[in-house]
Amino acid sequence: MTRSHTLMGAAVALAVAAVAAGAATKPAAAEPDGGAASAAGQGSILYLKGGKLWVASPDGRVKRRVRHTGRFESTSQADNGTIVALRGVDVYRLSRGGKLLNKPFTTAFRTTRLLPAVNGPFSPEVSPDGTKVAYTYSLIASNFDPACQCNRISPSMNTSYTWSNRFTDTPERVFGLVRFHSNASWIDNRTTLATTQHLYDFAGNVMDAVGVDRLGGGPDSYSNWFSGCMAGCDSVQTLQLYRYDEAEMTRQKDKVVVVSGKLNGPADGSRMQILRMAGMPPAVPPTFCQMTATSGKLSSPSWSPDGKSLAWADARGIWVGQVGTTYSPTGPTCELTKRLLVPGGSKPDWGPARP
Image (cartoon, rainbow, N blue to C red; front, side, top):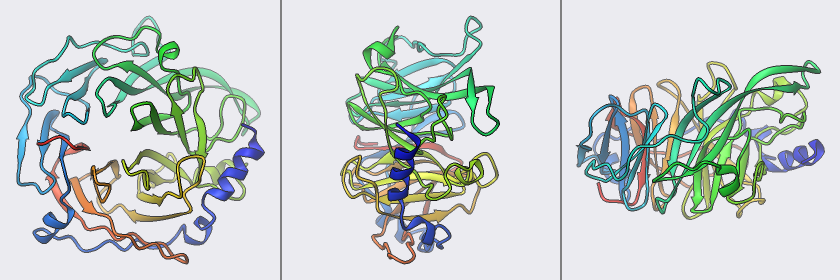
């Protein structure tokens, strides 16, 4: 995609963003009791606490630890409740009760002494049908930096895939490969949504913050979708103001949530934006609202199955909240109830399976 094409898409993307970028967030007050009912949705929330796997009901009435040994670093769940979790470079697949469903395996792109330029996997996300896993890895390579008109040795964050129950030797041939994008989430069983922390690709083209990948398209099969950057996007300083990460779309395909904030600084992860969709990509979300972090960096936003509520994490733990519908054309604000569901919890993943 040419730079002019990308910038045109970005300009259409958030025409209201320039007016509303500093708009205040208007969350409802925390509701320690009544908020439990209003924020409660269907299914269950899988999460980590102290490296252990837990599941909870959205109203907090049920919280139980999944039986397993050792510690995990990241986790997600399929629609039937099957758990995929990461320990070191190994992917574990567990039943709801903690039974190991197959021998743990590693991924094609992983940390190893044989390939010191590759690190990972990180942030494995299992597909809704439980058959595939998207994961992030980093690759250190030489690339052209337009800011200095020179070559730099730097890491790129990329997304690859594997079957959920076995090692996949050549994932780029089986599923494709999404360079420059990380922290992928599943739109459906064949499509992922991912974000990029890179301002340019290796050819020097300005990149949109959010991309979509249809499996089976080969290397670099992703399509740029939209970015928060409007005018002056050739400026590195301007691009750094519009960091998007950890994007996830509702099952109803009507909203997208992203973690946002200035790249590579204390403001990274300081906001969470909810974007109202006008249709599937390439249609660009016309409006958004946002909330501001109050207890450290925001992370791991996850939609409820009905698309009406969110779970997310910060320094205090895991929160749940019901999303309002107010989107003012002159100053978008988020109405979002807040309830601390799991103090000290992290990595929430909301799915339709029972707790």
